[in-house]
Amino acid sequence: MNISEKITLLIVDDVPNNLILLGSLLKDEYEIKVANNGQNALEIAQSNPPPDLILLDVVMPDIDGYEVCRRLKENEITKHIPVIFLTAKLGIDDEAKGLALGAIDYLVKPIVPLVVKSRIHAHLSTKKMNDALYSKVSHTQKIESIVQLTAGVAHEFNNILGCMLGYNEMNEWISEDMTDDNLKSDLAKNTKQIDIAGKRAAALIEKMLIYCRQDTTKENIVIRPIAAIIDDILAELRHRLPNQIEIKVQLNSKKEIQIDAGDLHQILTNLIENSISAMKASGGVMTISSEIVEGLNHHCSACAATIKGDFIELSVSDEGHGIESNVIKKIFDPFFTTKEVGEGTGLGLSTVSGMVHNYSGHILVDSKQGQGAKFKLVFPILIDAIDDKN
Ligand SMILES: Nc1ncnc2c1ncn2[C@@H]1O[C@H](COP(=O)(O)OP(=O)(O)OP(=O)(O)O)[C@@H](O)[C@H]1O
Ligand SMILES: [Mg+2]
Image 1: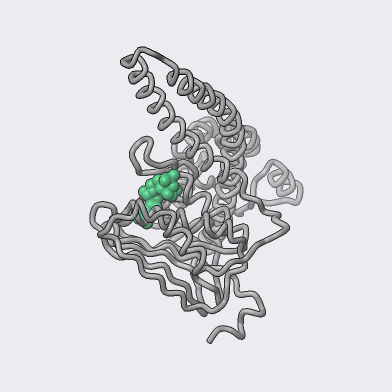
Image 2 (image 1 turned 30 degrees about the horizontal axis):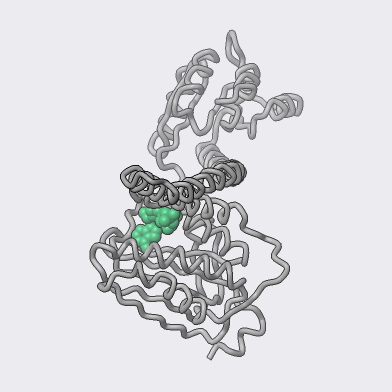
């Protein structure tokens, strides 16, 4: 991607010829905004969207460039915008003053076009990296807050729900001694509905607690063969498996993944349940497979980290409705679901992602709307696994 795509520069100079000169030099690569005084520059800098970089003349009447820079840096909206000073002469004191105010560079007039362009390009590249880092950090902080909130809500609700279901059960016992048959049957219907809704709420809370309780420091990891775990899951889900869904299991890696059996059960259950939902209407084949993959070079679909090298891959693929490209970006966010209200929590894939990453694994998603989906979990091959490759 071209770094200058949709990037806006604000050029601030009180001399119209300088604005024209710089503007015409940069207009092919960037969207240009101009200001011929400090006040005007501050207003444009606070507009939405703000400029990506400001070229700021130092000597201007009324508010000079230093003062503009100081005001930009003390304002929450504008403080992240990189400022490059434009100046006719540069003494050490001037340079120190500008940098102390938060400017990132100086360009000396008369400008040299090639130098101007390459400096702007370099600073925009740095800004792009900083922005990406900032958004990753704020995303991590957001997720941490969601985990804390979810844990708190789930814990409180669990207690309240336990109490409600307990009283409901007591009502069932009381109704057994009632003599009025009509009243008794009405009460039985009601208590049954409360019980069904209560158990659904309990299942939701259980998912919330599993999502929050992902244990990064498990001491006793119990490893079981993947095949046995898949057998257990399919037996548990048998009653929910429509006839038109065929399941193929192709385990080609002789090596077991070093992951706790309980966690692997949870991970695979979520992926398999998602595939069942996606194929509910159309049916099709779901394939669960494992293999060693060599020379992988991808980015994790959940955390965007680069995945390079050899891995054990465990995948679940289906021929369901697939995932739209604008939905794929959000599927690992906690509580994101496209299911009807009451049908899904949206915690399945965020739980899967948390658990897989706890074991230094990553996730790759291949899917297009209408063309099924494949979720590939890749885990590092531990040293003793290499001999078993073939
Ligand atoms: N195999 C798949 N095919 C198509 N869409 C999928 C698939 N797996 C996940 N998705 C999409 O990702 C969304 C999030 O999945 P996730 O498992 O986190 O939550 P959910 O399935 O909606 O709810 P829950 O897991 O609580 O039942 C789903 O709502 C669906 O839109
Ligand atoms: Mg799910």
